[in-house]
Image 1: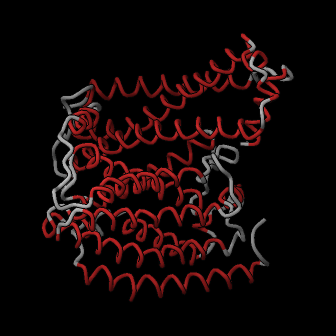
Image 2: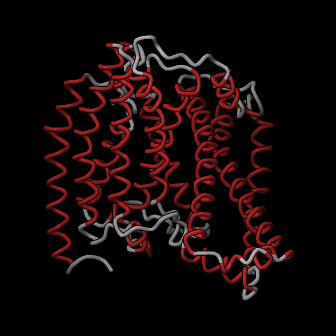
Length: 426
């Protein structure tokens, strides 16, 4: 934020111009975009002749969309910077003389809009991607008719949901019923404020960034409890209570896993954690305890995001639809928006803390973070369509009798490992 403010101030006073590196970025992104576009056209020509071609297409489309979005954002950025410099908008409006608080407010609002748009588009893509993956696992194609390769199917479903009647049950608490999905979505989107996609690409860098992400991640259970209680429905109430017990329980091994990794870094700043993994020194490989801690965190993240086999709060075979049984229209879709936004956020956190963050060859840092996160999301989707759901007693026993003791072992083991290695990384 500070760098962006300084750049805008210098543009506003005429002290700086558009860096030439931005032009190179545009050429780079569009070059990769065209390469993947050509590959997708080839795969599309072969689709239907072999299941291998269809699977390759499903895995290639995410890269194609990622590169297209990055190219578009870079083009918009350089176009906006050129327009600001060409017509002297900031000088004309005396932007440099505005109070610093106004600068922060404008940039914060822009950041909120960008995050809302990007995460919403990402969720639309992730829903489509999961439907394609589940289709391949079950020996079918998944969405194919709405849009090219079925890409517009999720958008069509969203428009359909918007046209549904918004119903509040007669016996429900209207205030809590309305606020519950808003709380869940706000907590899910707030996670991205502290998640770094590179050393400088972070909305709000905090010295307790990891604590911020963990705290907001646990706030979703408040919204789920509100939804379960407000509906005046026993199935929804059971789902809300299950979620509270599940999330509170699995936060403990997840937190222990993150703490065990932090013993090797000595900082809660996510940027510092990512910086400590430069040169291929990924924390997941730094010690045997770190690898086990990564597995514990990944399992706990499945439980905290209510993903199969830990989706007891919405078990349709027992609770109809769990804590969102009585929700319809846009409120119903907000729960799914929060679920997929949470799933990607915990994957980004795992990539930053354990998997080398933004460090990698050739490609820019933000691309590496997104690719690592998408790989974990892909694994999460495979788990959902492979394993059956736990029983409630199995779910809680697995946490308290196995994951939590193992988390303490990893924490103590990494602490001893750090001492033997001569202290934390710098």
